Image 1 (tube, rainbow, N blue to C red):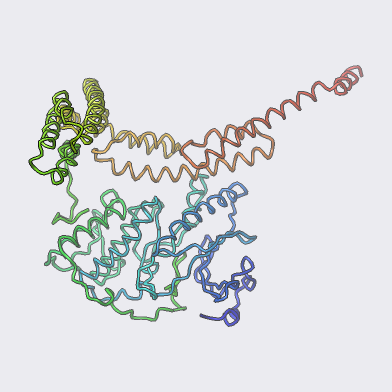
Image 2 (image 1 turned 180 degrees about the vertical axis):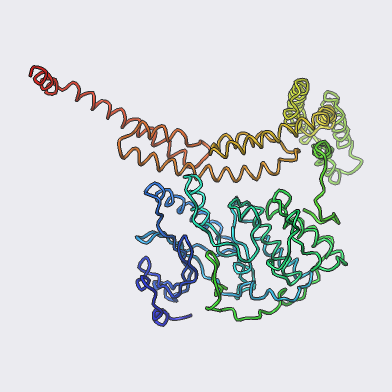
Length: 603
């Protein structure tokens, strides 16, 4: 471990002091519009371990912006702390604020950046698949927490020296906080360091990133590994904008290569709605590929040896780069994504539900037959009752199940089944009637919503299926309109209204996946907006403008964590407004004031 006194000889203006009284800056690793990144040592720990500090400069947009930034910074620090519990994400060690701004202290990762092992020589297909699995498994955890990385590239993927695991570093959290606040407050964004490496998709370059943006970046890394060609050296189709990389990939001779090409092609589609929506779906596609074609990996590392030292102080760094010292299923489908008509999509959805209904309550009892024996008459009676229930004969099913004696091992399952059948039958009748009423009214969207709420029963599914199929086009049109309404509301910052519209889009419509993606996005923006509203209310209350503060607090959605605080402040400011009004009224009734007014009038 390097000694602090030795590193302290490297002097940077304003950084010769200990940050937070304990962190000695060793080196400035990166500088950008939001602040700087340092390599430092913790002088308060016996081993004086190295760490990475992200310094966020104070905002120059006024006290409201700064206060909102502070609250969001703390919230994002909690997020990084939570994500850091994963073994392949650096731990958050501390966060603090001083007169120079905000600071995040994270674990230093000793290892080799992936950028140093991405050679011009193509990797074997098995090596590429393993790399993608390593990346996507960790990224799926991040996306599962409704978070994005925002800057996935080889510099930010470190092969840890200690155990050889791939570590995902340098989240774009700080930049995203600033951009979100600037968008909500309608401020002009600072000029960003452009993507000079080719791992960012079009929507991210335009300032509209999503979870699929991270998927694109991982896909480009996979293409670079498979072909040996960096992203910037790949051409794009002038008409579609799609990346033209297949000539470099040669012919997809093997089953594994064919499947890998299909997965990578979908990961890097220009239109983010045609990509895997998150790392989870991309990971599932790869896992299905490896199940069909088992990998034949060597026992040694799956990557070539690095062509440069792990530590390169002279290497150029981008704004948000981690320092280089730190250490859908490809089922032989065509590369162009298959598209189905709305009726087919919705029909498949209902068919899947009906297939599940074949199991329903019957499946556990079919399994139980291995326990009771195939010839057990009570078990056979329960199986027959289940068949009657699925055929729409509820009373016959109940009668057969009730005839099973108490001493039989099948008695308890039969009683449980009767209760479930009767409850679900009532639900099915209600849902079926509602679906028929919606169909008569021409409300295709409501038909689909009611159908999806049906219990697992073949009889009732068959009753509703024709209505769903005939309402498919109406449901599609209504779902598309709801999505447009949500977009319109989001443009005017009405995220609550946008979320209400998106929640009405049912599964089975072609825009459902997009609606789910936007629900996550608008939910995060709504949380940021709520924090901003709360800070504005604080400032209004400081000037005794309690009426304005109360009006601002009422804008905070009940679906945000800030709502509870807002309710407390509403009660507090209401009381203060009442006290202030009473005090002003008492001043008006003060005799001294009235006498003074009378004297002045007499003069």
